[in-house]
Image (cartoon, rainbow, N blue to C red; front, side, top):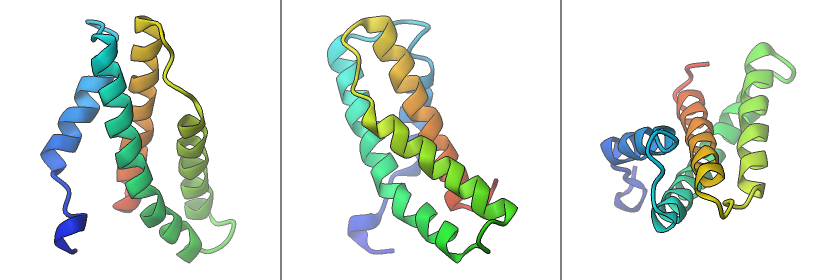
Length: 111
């Protein structure tokens, strides 16, 4: 792994935790926008690795279907813009965090 690809795993886990708890105490709109951007960046970073695993998996095997589903859901969430209301925005970043977590699990081979 090169220096430019190094990721602070603890920071990413904190990001996921904060996003998932966003509906408990609604963050400021500026923080929701930051979370949205950071989660999208991490999702986009992981998609190629998970896509490679899907490409290497036996076509139409259970592993292939699982990876394909994770990728489809991640791509679907990336198409959704951050809502402008605090509650909807919080739910949105929580869902982005779930998609990121699923990608992390798939990248590591834990389906």
